Length: 470
Ligand SMILES: Cc1cc2nc3c(=O)[nH]c(=O)nc-3n(C[C@H](O)[C@H](O)[C@H](O)COP(=O)(O)OP(=O)(O)OC[C@H]3O[C@@H](n4cnc5c(N)ncnc54)[C@H](O)[C@@H]3O)c2cc1C
Ligand code: SF4
Image (cartoon, rainbow, N blue to C red; front, side):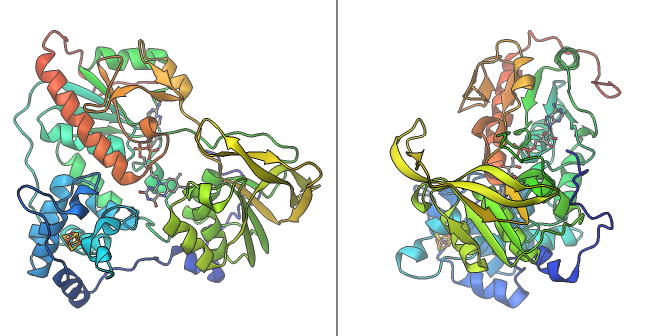
């Protein structure tokens, strides 16, 4: 991803008006707050019926018991329970859409009460664990002699690698970028998670014996063949590719951004002078994040353009409400058809839409209203309409069935139609959440383990330790 965008300021400093961008939306709980909050929990569930909050967690964290441990002042026990289920438990504590998952399922809401702040309690326990000399952790099983290659060091790749190492397999990760974390590092809004605690969690995963090669893209069929020869199974944790390209007249004008470039620039403190009026195009969580980031960067007027109505928006409800509370304005039934300006963008040429018959996604199809064009003035425009699948890479894998840009897998094992390949995370779901990637990676690790224990016919190849793959 290039940062050579004309709007990037070279100094990399955070101007005073943008300090808010890095201020956490959900600050940590103090000791007394954590105890009080944990004390409200009813510790639901039992041997026959798990607590609804735990059932709603894709990583299957034992929520009631970790909260009970916090309530008894036992943060070590709480952290142990969390990390047992989720090797990225501290990262997820900050970035999980808890309002849609565990907290939405909390029984207290059915009683008209405020749900337990599960995410913040999880952060409390895991932060204490990572800050203190805390050693409780699962110990790897004896070596099995099997070798697994993991491609991609995003959440899916990291968790799958850690779980496989715990099962006794030798794991090597190849990551294209110079650092781990995938979209967590580059895309997740800075007011949710900036730098930490990912680094600490990665160090703990590597301490299980996982080998990691950074800056090593698997970038050709020949590189892939070499990895196949050197391993018994391969996990695809490659996520999705760059922003979807939808060419419009004027889209190369300075001031027109793709969402991932924009977010990466601000996360790297290569902040932009975005002007007074910002238009964001899209209706998903990324569009909402970008709009909220623009507000925090000091824009006076941020408008989000979406071609359907609020009811069809894929973004989480609580995110839409958060954006509204931040002052983001919404232009429903509005579709961009071009950008105006000469030296720099000055506006978005828009068309009003109305809703027609449902399309393939089951949502009402937006239909242009003839003669409804208008120009929405804008100093900066950010397009956030989704990411492309990594189709070229997927085509290099023999026998891999791909539907709608995603490898077809057995959902119980993550195994693809090429039996030695497994997958999890965004590459399979087209763009989800970190905790969904964690859940899928855990399923795939167990699937790979089962495959390897029956797959004695597969001859292990040469060691991969010093291997160049590109
Ligand atoms: C703007 C934005 C905001 C988000 N905010 C949130 C949020 O607040 N909360 C939340 O839970 N989720 C959020 N998400 C989603 C979340 O970040 C992803 O679901 C998650 O990171 C997916 O993990 P992954 O490991 O599958 O893929 P990724 O995180 O994309 O990681 C894939 C990794 O594979 C590497 N790779 C790809 N191809 C190759 C190759 N050929 N060779 C070697 N390496 C390769 C990539 O460099 C990358 O590091 C957000 C996503 C976006 C885009
Ligand atoms: S559902 Fe709510 S009250 Fe019950 S265990 Fe989970 S967090 Fe506690």
